[in-house]
Length: 89
Image 1 (cartoon, rainbow, N blue to C red):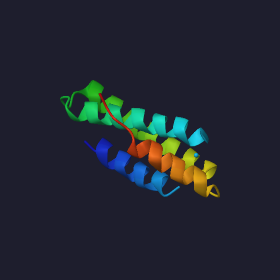
Image 2: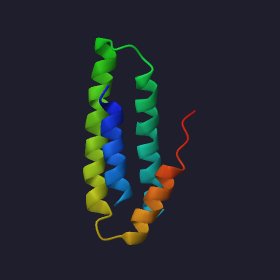
Image 3: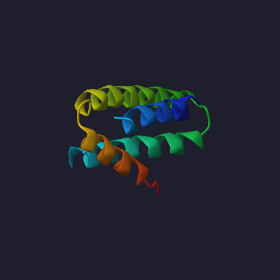
Image 4: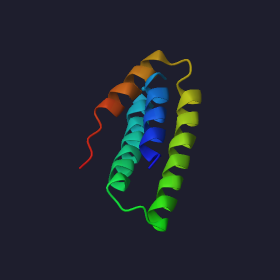
């Protein structure tokens, strides 16, 4: 599935992009974990629809984070740290 590629792209964009950043990093973590879970599922029509929705959510969040942290260097560092700390159960 292309979900992992989309997530990795968004991760790179976002990590190159703080306090709010922890919450934003948690949002990205949740999306990453959803992508990992979808990877292990069969390519059914329902799962493909979930994957497409997830790609859309990642892209939307990526645009939001680029704008939000454009001029916030500490925010970018905090966001990268929050994403790096992501653990999927």
